[in-house]
Structures are given as C-alpha cells and as structure tokens.
Image (cartoon, rainbow, N blue to C red):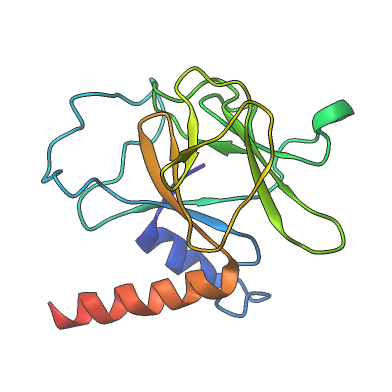
Length: 171
C-alpha cells in the first residue's frame, strides 16, 4: 500500500536490519505540478483507499511481491487498482490488473509490461503493447492510466531522498 514519503523515511530509520536504504525498487507518485491542495478533476481514488499524493508530500510504493501466485504470473509483481495485486494504486483510471514488473534472472534487469489495461501503460512517451515486456531503466517516468510515477532502483532512491531533504532544508 502507498505510504507518504515522510512515513516511509521514518519506517526505514526504525528497521534495525535496514541500512537506511530500501531493498526493493520504488515508485514515487508525486502530485501533478498544477495541484495546489485540490484534487485531480479527471480521476478519483477507489473507495476506502489512501488519498492521492498532495503537493510536497509524494506517495511511495514498493515494487515487491506481496501476494503469492502460481501459474503464468508466478514470477511477476502485479500492479493494479484492487488489493489482490502486489502494488496497489487506487485510482479509477487504473485497471484491476493493469501491468506487471518482472526482474530478469541472471542480469537483474527490471522489465515492465501492460497487462491488457483499458487506459494503457507508458515508459516515458512510449505506450507499451499488451503483454510485451520492455526494459525498465532506473529513474524512468511511467504512466499507468492517468497516474504518473517515477521508477527508482534502491541506490538512486536513496539519492532522491537526499535531494528532497536538501530541498526541504533550504525552504
């Protein structure tokens, strides 16, 4: 489930086994630049789910296996609107099962594929074809339906946290 950036940083600091860095890739969901305390007029969150990110308080989603699976999708991390997925983005533009991540064995490279969603999946400006896996570069800008996020591998997410802390301290 999404967490605010502040609560995620606190969680990292409390875990004794943590070195202060996440152990899995992160999706950072920031409020759109136009949003200043108002909700996005084009989309809404699913009932009973966490709110959208607010200006200055992004949400953090861990790309981690949370739900055990078998069959064709056993080695994938599923993203969708409902809680049977590993990564849940409770936005009505997201399909119930929207896309999936997979880490290639041997190379460790991350891949992303659209799962036949209604509103599409993009890496940067490129829309993905259904069930065609594409390499996922670190710091890639992604779009699932109307939701835009940024993908971080653990070391670069730590760099992003440092950058955000400097920005906050200079205000």
